Image 1 (cartoon, helix red, strand yellow):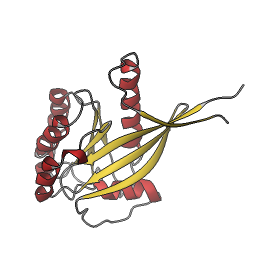
Image 2: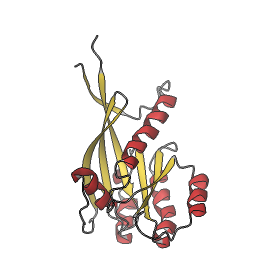
Image 3: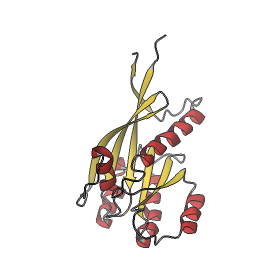
Image 4: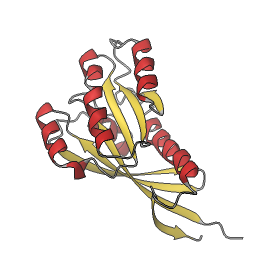
Amino acid sequence: MKRCTVLLAFKILLIGESGVGKTTLLRSLKYGYFTKCGVTVGLDFTIHYVKVNDTTCKLVIWDFGGYRNFMRMYWENPHFVSGAHGVLLAFDISSYETFLALEDWLKLVRKYNSSNISIILVGMKADLSRRVPRDEILKFIRENQLDDYIETSALSMINVEKPFERIVEAILEKEFVLKGRSDHKRSKIIEQINP
């Protein structure tokens, strides 16, 4: 009996303030080791594949430059943000200011996407001293009804793949719940492979 492997494609937004380590996390994921990165100007794109059970998912990851002057560009050009299936909302656990800025990023995402978009909060630079209290993080997750929270460190290669795996799981969980609805198909089936 042949098994059918389904390949799904998801648009994933990787957002948060400049310098929190978004691009560094992506490069560590891609190369398997830590590489220091410069500033992302505007947007960058990365393709990454994640397999969950028998489903292979192609993630088109939109890595947003986090400087405040880019925020206006994102608000004025909603096509950058709209149509996303999932969001990795990133902050630096050693910088309270980056945590406070999450509200603005969340407003942007929620304005231009479905109300049930999957969002994973990612605490970056877990190898550094914590300046964001855990109880405030948990409160933020509850108040904003986020799907999960993961701490990661690209430098120490801790949980580098976990946010990407978890966002796919969250999307697929919601996809399963929405499966019977004909008004909206969240995922795009690229191809079916019969090995």
